[in-house]
Structures are given as structure tokens and as C-alpha cells.
Length: 206
Image (cartoon, rainbow, N blue to C red; front, side, top):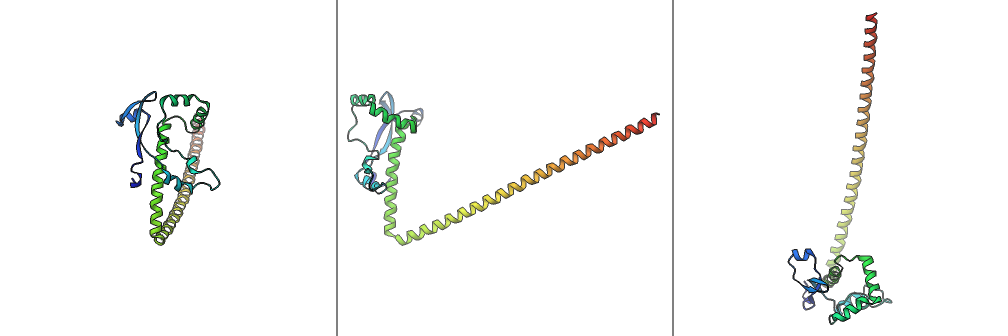
């Protein structure tokens, strides 16, 4: 974990599942039943500034588009009132219709934590590029060349495999056709021999 993440990591409650209990994750009484405590890495003001460069200049600010924790937990009565309000129900309906209800809370928290970790790595990469820009560019170009070679090798292997598979299918089809022709010829020969024997037997009996 990046040292800058320390102090912004805390535990939050999500509906406890059998998987949480099997993994012995700490559970406590929560909204409507047991809730398991999972880790959340919060976004701060510096994170929002770094995220802003990924959003259009004329669009809404990043602070209005990413998930941020409230300064204080919503009181129980206020939370129950919010859950019954039409605007909140519409927001929940939009989320559920797209992402489903299974582990929605935990997946939401995990998405925020993942975004925080991606930002940490992005900052480290930026620092490394600034410290050794030329070497990093060379490494990047080398990696791109290697990737192109891998792609070409993959395409060649795939084309070769397709040709080999086609040859196998054609060979098997040819072998099966020859086998059918041989069997057919054998049956015809056997029928001819049978007719000849019957004719000879008929002449002998006359």
C-alpha cells in the first residue's frame, strides 16, 4: 500500500454473506441483520485533483462524479426516511437495473478502493517517468515492439493451427470416403459371388 493511503483507510459495514462468515470476517448487528466489516480506501481532495484531468474540461467536476464518503454516518431515522423517498428509490432503481443487488454495497466500496490504488500506481509511474523520462520511453518502445512480436507470433500460430485443422478435416473426410467406397465395392463383389454361386447351384440341380 502506498504510504499516502495511510490514515484514509477505514472499515465499513456491508450485508454479511455466508462467504464472509466462512472467512471469519468480523460481523456485527447492522441494517436489517448482520453486517461484515470490509476495508475502504477513501478519496481525498488531492485524489480528486488528479482525477480531474481524466474528465472533460467543460464537464462536471470530478468531485460531482465519483463516490466520496460523507463526513458523518447518516443517522438511522434519516436513513430510513431517505430509503422511503422517491428520489432515493429512483437512484437505487438505476443502480439495481444495471449492476444487480448481489453484493452491491461491497462492490461499490471495492470500486472506490480500487480507484484509490490505481491513482497511487499512476502517481508512482508519473514520478518514475519524470525521473528517467528517456529510459522509460525506451522501455515503453521496447515493450511495444515485444507486444507487436507477440501479436504477430500469435497470429502466425493461429493461422498455422487453422491450416493444420483444415488438413486434418480434409484427410479424415478423404479417408472416410475411401473407406465407404472400399466397403461398397466389397459388398458389390460379395453380392456378385453370391449370385454366381446360386446360378451354378441351380445348373447342378437341373
